[in-house]
Image (cartoon, rainbow, N blue to C red; front, side):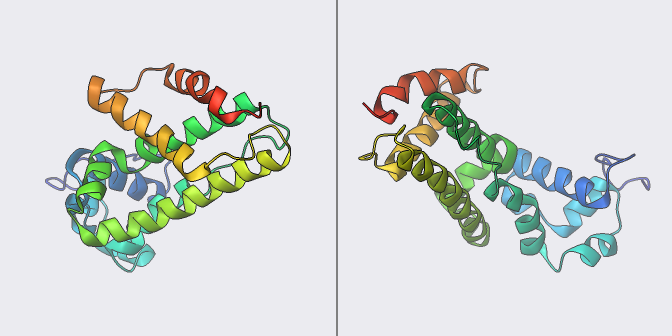
Length: 191
């Protein structure tokens, strides 16, 4: 890293793409979406801007590439119990924020502070939600999840529980997934 260019993120064995992703997520979580620019990522990683531009045409393409893994979570076992599916749903909801945009990015999304960011992240979150919905529908067809479940509203309840706990306490307790699963299980499981 050259002097005066910021703090290098993930130097060593990390690939340039991993270093860029780490920097994007750190900037997004700490400073919000407006702080995520090619120049800021270059300064944060100690990479030349040309190194980043060789990989990504612009900020939007860089953000999309970094956020895309959120839209593709590995599904639970096809034969999972209702409790296991619910734990997976809670984990994926938590991961989409904590492992993705961060609470600051979520706030920017809700307030539409950066319309380009809002559109880009909403498209990723729509794909993420679609994946979660497909998993729930699979388990409805297996007969372990109630057939009359309003899947969209149910998923909103999980995300809402995350937002409420984070707003109330400033953090998410380690047992959050389990507490959410136990609380929502009666509404989820086939009676």
